[in-house]
Length: 116
Image 1: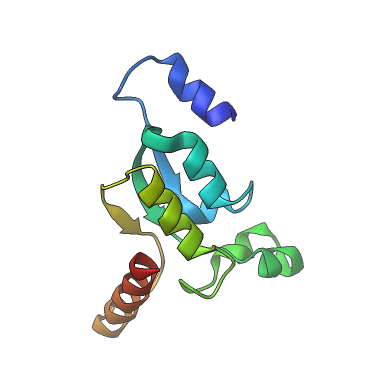
Image 2: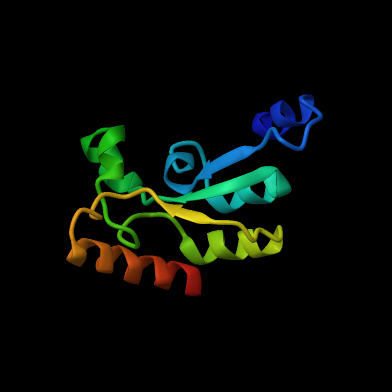
């Protein structure tokens, strides 16, 4: 994969990949990318994407779904992260954190993802 080769060219441990599960859905499956990138991944963004909505309404519309309501296979993503020994932060990159109720919903969804 070109992304892994590109990072390798720098021959430096400080050049790494900020992996976004939702963005990658436009190009492939996150769990496949995680396996290839391996320890080159420094941080993970938790974001949802719906290919079905993107096909009907345009690419950008695919991001307009809540966590767990799109096409990201979260159990496969979490297994792939476990398999490469990832033990760093995950960051939610989703709307909804502008109220106490929204934050609680995001927390509950992220908890389900991490448990999958």
